[in-house]
Amino acid sequence: MPRAHTIAALTVALTTAATAAYASTGNENDAVAITNAKISLSQAVQTAEQHAHGRASSAEYENTSQGWAYDVEVVNGQKVFDVKIDAQDGSVLASSPDHADHDDDGDETD
Image 1 (tube, helix red, strand yellow):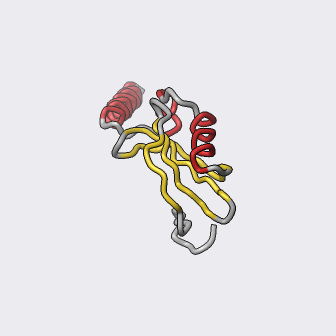
Image 2 (cartoon, one colour; image 1 turned 45 degrees about the vertical axis):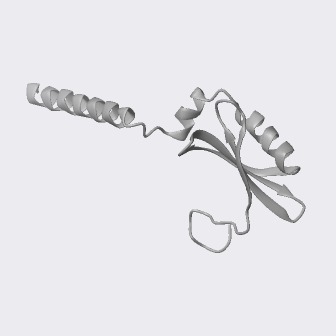
Image 3 (cartoon, one colour; image 1 turned 30 degrees about the horizontal axis):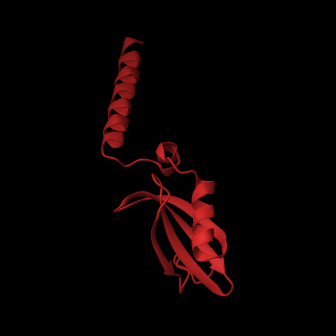
């Protein structure tokens, strides 16, 4: 029985060390990282909608080269815009027309 306790303790120690190492690399889960945002998702959506004069169809929180930001897709008539909102100050970092919907699955439809 002591050997089983030793193996269990070693497993817990290794798991804890691996988790701490992963967290220290800055590879945060978006759901956890959003708790550090000064701007809420709803505030980012509202800012993006006002900027592009449309309605948001999707939004996600992501780590960009400029830091954490909200990527909001806004529909205005037949046009779609990708608007990036800074998660710390709520400013518009970028806005561009979205000519094609590129999803993560690589298929042609969403």
